[in-house]
Picture 1 (cartoon, rainbow, N blue to C red):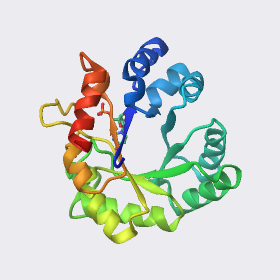
Picture 2 (picture 1 turned 180 degrees about the vertical axis):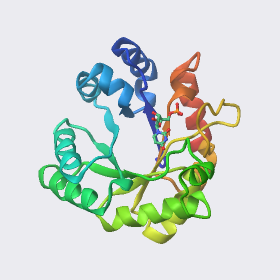
Picture 3 (picture 1 turned 90 degrees about the horizontal axis):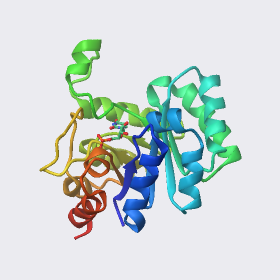
Picture 4 (picture 1 turned 60 degrees about the vertical axis):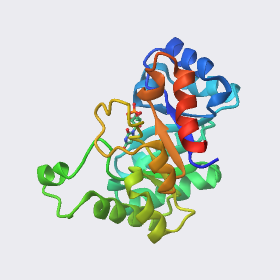
Length: 231
Ligand SMILES: O=c1ccn([C@@H]2O[C@H](COP(=O)(O)O)[C@@H](O)[C@H]2O)c(=O)[nH]1
């Protein structure tokens, strides 16, 4: 079913993360292990998910010189994960060398490029004197570089999915955080889209954290998201 929900396990405590995974039971198959969980808990959270036949998106957003990102990515790809990401702003050489090295040892792992974080909007361009008219132009520019360098897709807001799909093809994946029901708090996100709109925009995966993991009843919250997505 498209888009698939990826639940962001943003926890420092392994027991809290396990509790959410178990509360969500069969409602959710895909989980995102990000900086907080990986730095605090380590590989054991990935092993725990894989033992439960779950899929894992390792969201560490590597951004460094080509050799460092390539070596870190090779190590990541050996962790039995399904998807991970690097920053497109690391440059074409960093991306293409990483993609070639990783695909040689694990051809099925999905490699994504981070474009413009969903917590940022046009104000970021003024702050850093970036000469793009709007977020969409900037994200598309980065996505084009990512595709040419061999990435499988990008992390962006679902707002940018239609133009990415239109210009780079339907099989170039879009993984989109910043998803909120109309009733949810947007927290620190800026480029926010509802699940229904994300689906209509054609996105492949939506990433949802706090609206599910911090809900009084996470399973019920996940079911509400699924109802809006799949009816
Ligand atoms: O542009 C990006 C890239 C990654 N994220 C991550 O997604 C989740 C979103 O969590 P919410 O609680 O639903 O806001 C979080 O782990 C981020 O690190 C993102 O939000 N935007």
